[in-house]
Amino acid sequence: MEFGGNYLFSAPRARVWQALNDAQVLKAAIPGCSRIEWTGESSLEVEITVNFGLIKPTFTGDLTLSNVSPAERYTLSGKGRGGMLGMAQGSADISISDAAEGTNLRFTATGGADGGIMKLGKALIGNSAQKVIDGFFERFGAAMGVEVRAL
Image 1 (spheres, rainbow, N blue to C red):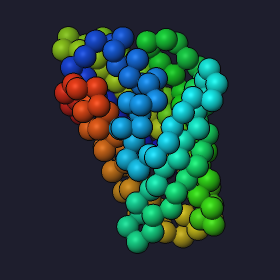
Image 2 (image 1 turned 180 degrees about the vertical axis):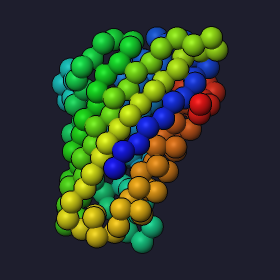
Image 3 (image 1 turned 90 degrees about the vertical axis):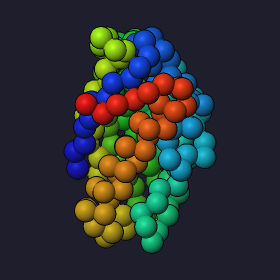
């Protein structure tokens, strides 16, 4: 599955970059996130409960940042373990740049799953993933105290 988006933040690029790397802001922004913490210079550990409707599995996982160019871009890759439901994995390329009204954030992401998660159906997972992404940016802006607008 592939996803993407383009968002305008009413904040300077340095502030958006700082928020993208702040575990507390991320925890507030990620729906269902009960724990996120830095475990190394470029790695985080996370615990998230995902609402797939009838089923709400809790995933524990590891996130890794690569291709980091401070205040410009990075790649965020992760794998989540959902117990009997199997594994989910994904990767997102995130870039930020100056815009007339603040900061433009672009991302492209791919993700997939195996085991019981796939039995739920790609459409349900795709819809849930898009809701998670939309919810993330709404909550991310709120956690920063700035306006975020999809472009």
